[in-house]
Length: 173
Length: 138
Image 1 (tube, rainbow over the protein chains, first blue to last red):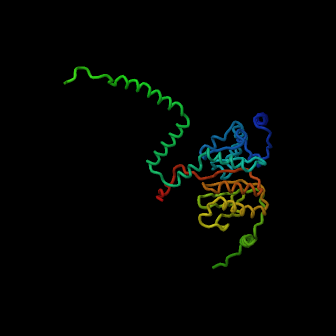
Image 2: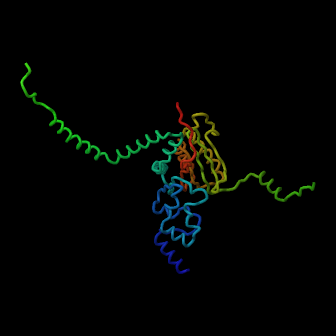
């Protein structure tokens, strides 16, 4: 048992950059942000699944109570966005990071949407608008080329069908 | 009809409520509730027990001016000034709600000299729960 623990701890130390094993401060700089040291955004339902990495799984085997210590700390598990503040970080940089993380999580948009009730019609309209915005951003070229292709053959057909010549036969008078 | 025996504990509890708790808290949590019309800043300890609070209303703003970022800044400054005297060095920030006070309070907290460990957004999101009020026809 001791041997396996030692080997596990060795593999742990190989995976993680040097970290003090004191309980309180290190768990506030948990293993998860090492993979993404600047910011993590999670939702309540997926916080547990997202945050478990290989190191956490090993921890879960050796000391199960500490497995989720980085996500569950009293009530702080229910956050949408978290930004870890570095030392001596300039104010504007921190604000910019926070704003960008919040925008990516869509918190303020969601809040505004849920302020008042929206009917099914409004919901449909909103979804259509969002979808068109998404498609427009992702495929600006294919749509235009498709339109050009359609217009080409149509014109040719029209030209052939048009009757440009004079009607046959003599004039009635 | 027996006389109630005076408990030792009651004497102790009476004394503690009279004494002002001047505990030193090196680490705390700053909760910021930023709604569209107001901003409330509450400073608690790590467990959540409130140490001091301040809002734009208590800072003297009234009406529409409470929702402005400048008012949020003053509210945050007030709340932190009361706590820095108690010796708080590190803090986490939990921001709740949409509103203009979000960034302004963060700026004020940063400028006050308290070390920040995390900045979190804890806006409550229903998983399609209660029906919100009807649309305003203004």
